[in-house]
Image (tube, rainbow, N blue to C red; front, side, top):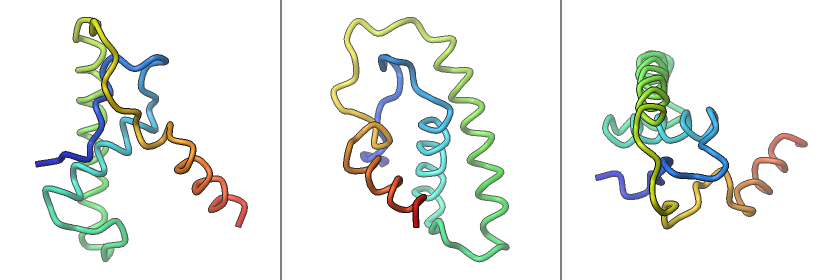
Length: 92
């Protein structure tokens, strides 16, 4: 269902809170069909759900045993093109 959500378990260095929050928000957007620029009535419940999911994922990643191999893909927030786009957005 969420093919674009990258595996966070086993990353070196470990997944950051920002990466976990981004994955949680992407999951919520996918299952609800609500875009990130949604109206306030939809935004608040989605943000609450994403925060709860991020907390669950953080706890889960801490409880799972280490992976024998790192995940096959790099999380979006670690990709150079995404980092450049975010830096350009922040400087604008």
